[in-house]
Image 1 (tube, rainbow, N blue to C red):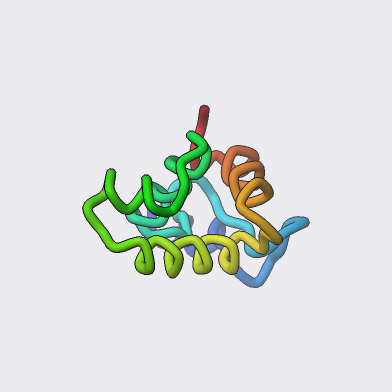
Image 2 (cartoon, rainbow, N blue to C red):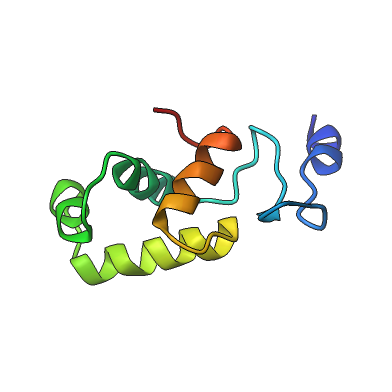
Length: 90
């Protein structure tokens, strides 16, 4: 199974906006996925922080990392890429 994952999960292969990955190996952490879901719901950084019990500045760090990992230019594009790749759903 691990050998199969190593073949399927190839960060050196890119899609339109950043690294490709299979549904099993997601380059986003669990917390980043939670933040991305909240972004998709339309929450502001302050709302996300309150909901997750973290500081607004920490949310901003997560958002930046999400956008960097997904190759997104803005929050909307990050959500679209996340949906397209199966990281989140609406």
